[in-house]
Length: 163
Image (cartoon, rainbow, N blue to C red; front, side, top):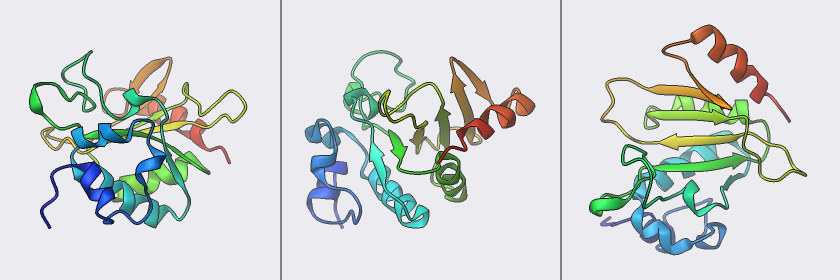
């Protein structure tokens, strides 16, 4: 299989659970490493419930801002991150993501919702394996990293348990 990017991965039918029409700007998938969708597809399978891509284009790719963001696609590099909303319990989805060692950065955003009418925490997932270890965090206004404040991290993470 020779796949250049996430767009081709979906377009050629390799993704079981995602279609091009689910993304706010499907063409942006051309700037994303296909492994992001491959692993997201695996996560959807193991989770057993729908996972919806963020409808903000910046939830997939960014051309500006921090060049260390795994969403950044400047200078010819492919994006390595995606922001998603699990259809049900975000904490369960987070646990399934933890089981897959392909995800190097896993963040739960308690301050981001699908809509005001449908509160649901968001997951950030990235495949940046240049780190020496996994990065886990929760954001609720401020970033709380497991590595620097484990007690506060676990306490905040428990708030993601919403059905």
